[in-house]
Image 1 (cartoon, rainbow, N blue to C red):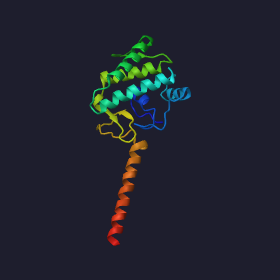
Image 2 (cartoon, rainbow, N blue to C red; image 1 turned 60 degrees about the horizontal axis):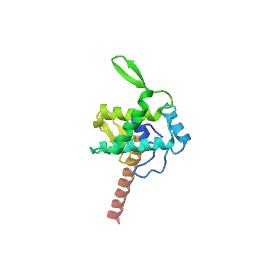
Image 3 (cartoon, one colour; image 1 turned 180 degrees about the vertical axis):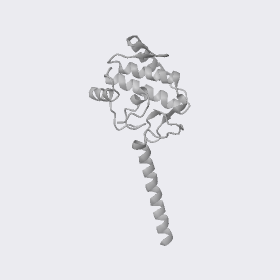
Image 4 (cartoon, rainbow, N blue to C red; image 1 turned 135 degrees about the vertical axis):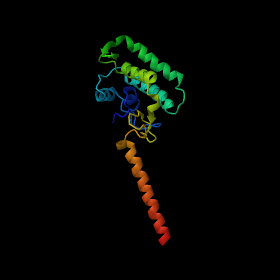
Amino acid sequence: MELVGNALCLDLANTVNERPVPERDWIDTPDGLAAWAGLVGRAPGGTVEQARDLRESIYRVFSALTRDAAPPPRDLKTLFEVYAAALPSAAFARDGAHGSLRWPAGHLLGEAAASAVDLLTHGPLDRLGECPSCGWLFVDTSRNGQRRWCSMAMCGGRVKARRHHARTRDEAQETADRSG
């Protein structure tokens, strides 16, 4: 599994391998949730069911925004409720001219909800993308803002290879048709 979302909330949304019909779910067991938490450098928190519910709400909210559609109110409510429930556990930390919230170990879902609220309120919403191949979400941090894929290694290269193969096959067929 790659972390390609450039935001904790989007990396949570990307814990299934493909959308709309996933074949692999990385947080389908407590061990899977713990492994993903380790991958993002956090201590696990919450149940598998809570993590999956939050994941799906995050996905639906940000997937809608990639299409300039309104996020589903029910999913926004879920994000805000998880965030509000976790907020009393957060601590304030000053970092120069800015402040941030620090989350204690075991508050991964609250931190993911906070990441979603931060992305919703501070953006950059105009840099949200959804991979056309697998459905993973990402914040496009490329200089020119033209990122199309979750990553070149995962989908971009695979799609380009398929196109090249199809083009080569079509060219070979055209050559055979002309000579035959």
